[in-house]
Image (cartoon, rainbow, N blue to C red; front, top):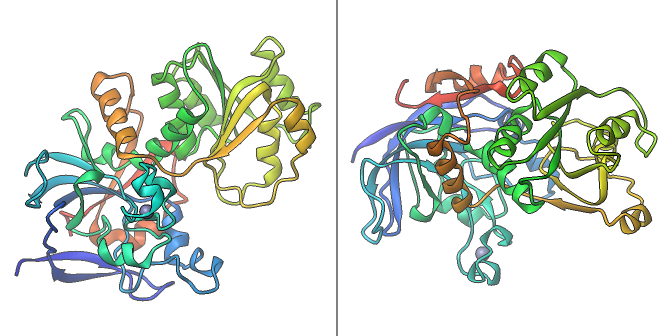
Length: 376
Ligand SMILES: [Zn+2]
């Protein structure tokens, strides 16, 4: 039996250890992927501390231990199951970690992301069964995954850039929901973080006419504006309470003939107050649409009457489909989506605990933390 090295967590709050375990065999509709790069998200630090496990009394959100984490694997297909017809060994892929049960009403209706068991492989989720069925995260030399999870990567997309598709895809799926495109002005709340920066690149690719972005760090905001100076405007948000008299709202209206923005995507980081989301919501024009993929956890004091009379929409969005991943790969291949802005910081698998401890040291969303499991 061939073996491999995987970083495994044996106890929440403790460091991962490198363990030698058997290379798994793919089931008939699965593939075996040799991982070349796995994206590491800052939130993984909270996940392995069991922050999310403590949110539910029975601790059912977290994978059984020992667990192999790693949310965003990219690599090469090493073996395809006997019922996999259109994926071949040697193909370069990103593995979408979104798993669903396949047989509930939502899955059978073509809406697997609304499956009650929906789970992120290599992270956490709603189904212990799915986490046991797909126990290999990308902090491992090989993983198994369903063939339906594979996004084929063009040669021009490096494994390191592919390992960032989780952020890109989360932003892309959200922006599709609010109709980002030609003629539209989009406000990205938190534009210099990982999600916000990737949202800006995608909004440029999707043809948004004007992109407004909020942030805190002027140096990072200047770098974001430099991506497309005629189309991007940024602001270091002045302190003010949410409401129509907010100078932030006046700033947004200044770029939209006094109307307000067509769409808003919230990309705020963990710990951001609800008021920061509300302030961006007030920047919408009548009939404007907002989508939330940020990490605000506070309860929002929203005025329902204001929302109704101004025809405001606010929607949540989680992750993205494999098809949306294919869209992004095609945009990257065509050159409309510019992945070259990422600064890859690649570390060997043995450095995983150090990487997790050092994630605050980054240039906002420009830094891309990657583990290469082919290096021990
Ligand atoms: Zn289902």
